[in-house]
Image (cartoon, rainbow, N blue to C red):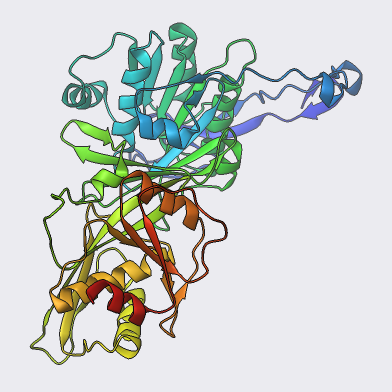
Amino acid sequence: MQKVGLINIKNKTVFKCSNCGYVSPKWVGRCPECDNWNTFEEREIQNQKNSRSASARITKPLVRLTQVKAGNSDRIVTGINEFNRVMGGGIVKDSITIITAKPGAGKSTLLLQVAGDVASKGLKVLYASGEESESQIKSRADRIFNKIEDGVWVYSDNSMDNVLNVVSQVDPDLLIVDSIQTFILEGFPGSRAGSPTQTMECANELLKLAKDPVRPRAVFLVGQMNKSEEIAGLRALEHLVDTVLILDGDNEEELRGLSVSKNRFGSTWERGYFSMTENGLESIDNPSEYFMTSRDKNEKVSGCALTVVKDGSRPIIVEIESLVSKTYTPYPSRIGECVRREQLNTLISILEQRGRISLYDKDVVIKTTGGLKFKEPAVNLSIIMSIVSSVYDKEIPNDTAFISDVGLTGELKKVPSLELRIRELDRRGFGHVYVAKNALIRSLDIKNIEVHEVKSIQEVIGMVFK
């Protein structure tokens, strides 16, 4: 028994393999690491927790909130516009951020691009990896960059103690840890890498590093994603960090979306878009152009309709394509790459019953230009009109858009942020937009576009296709 101040702290006993050094909290006959028998020896580890008596504790003075000086909110603004948008304007210098994604989505690639951009501004970056070697990181950098900046340092090791020592040597402005579940602290020998204890203790050390009032640093963690598409480990990890980023997108597709589910320094509804290329992730700075097909003014194509989705704080114009063809099977196909199958079946049923268009013997396939997936009902009228255009084989004018939900009665329904969406169409020179009757709350100061307030899908079909 050992006395420290007024508190007794007992030393911890562990068992260490004399052959490979594996540490176990209890004695075992066979080492699970090297498979040797009877190699475990009892070792005593002195408890490192520092305890003080109540009289020796230092108490911080109590201050009024009005007397507290606001912290430095300067940001590191990168040259990656979509990344800056999601982060709230750039990287806060004393923040800790975690990014997660499915394997192969490109989270390590994105952070390496951020590292190169930050280093190009004269700042120091340390990229610590517990999964990849220095040569693997260098191979990716050669593929991404034309020139690798001198300010980027790489370190491959799964010991957080060693990483902290390297930080004291390099003194980086930005630290990237990839991934947090692969690192261990030597002060907790009974737990393996990725365990809740090791993950949280490593994250706590990095939090102290980021929030150091004398030398603040920006810290980025890569978090592995589990089968439920959440950050692996305890939810406490998400509460500990300042910002949680999620990079989504199928590996077979080019489009990647970066969203934020928590941000102490900005909004939590922003979303950025990237295109996965051979040279890494390219920022899609104008999503409307990416999600529309460029056509001449007089060029006409049937089966296409335009709508406006609200993604974060900005409206994005999106093109929906439909293909309707005769089926030769008892059960026609209903394929929707951009919406759920149930939503597509519902819209087809509304069109058949309320629009008097028979589709029982037709295959229906819909998709979006650019591969964007819909999550809001404001696109429903546009989906229906693209299907009607394909059925009639008649084109919809290129300067026409549709913004409305559709009820089971065939009536058009109001959608949020309608004025913002219409202003975006007007700014881009559109001539017509169809919305639900009485959906506009206030009059709009618009120059080019004519707003058609319509009650039902029958009226929209009649007005568009005469």
